[in-house]
Length: 288
Image (tube, rainbow, N blue to C red; front, top):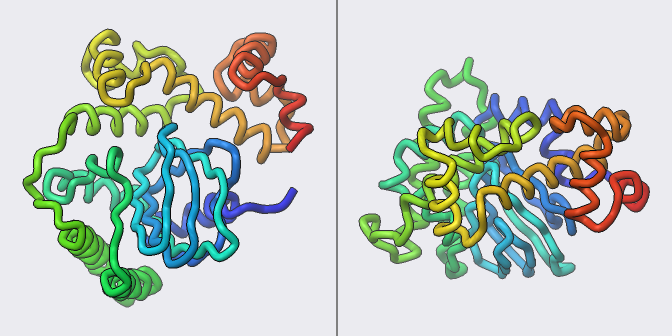
């Protein structure tokens, strides 16, 4: 099986490197995975330097062309469809610790806004200026904490500058109200919980308790924000996790994957997978 960018980004050593360095900058000519939904555990900022791409972000169709800057929030569903032969993208992968610090300033920097408005169209000059900031991030990320103890704080500060410049180029006032902002914030929190707990918890009641609300109210807000039910998103995250394990964990048999995903018996897992994909887990694995 050909190793894809997702596996290169999210093998155990690379994940440790992202968390240690805070930010990792990668230039690539490919999407992480094609034609399968996957979940990035980190924030990814994608600066399209050339070509075009077609994807779905939280099941909404998304196109990216030259000079587009997309901010993909952590723990959301991505499905890459295709990219052009000349596609070239600069990826800034941000650690969970730094994301949490940015989220704490989400009103100022519009963190939750990126769920509905992930992409910003810029000019050649604006892209070049943003890339200059990215080079400073890259330089700081490659310096060790021993040499610069304040390195982490400097990275957070440079990332804040990056978002401030991006918002300025986008000509969107920082105070501009966003319709459904509360719902967007809640949905991001819901996605974060799904990414952590989906292998063990498939019931909406668990997530409602974590968010200090009733299942009915959680379902209402998620439907108002996304047009889809909370149960739908639980199924989609569970399905994405199942596909990932079937494709990438060949050391595990289907029964082991079934138990890992919280199913008490393989027959129940087979029914769930077949109902949502039209094929059995065994056949799906064989066709990859």
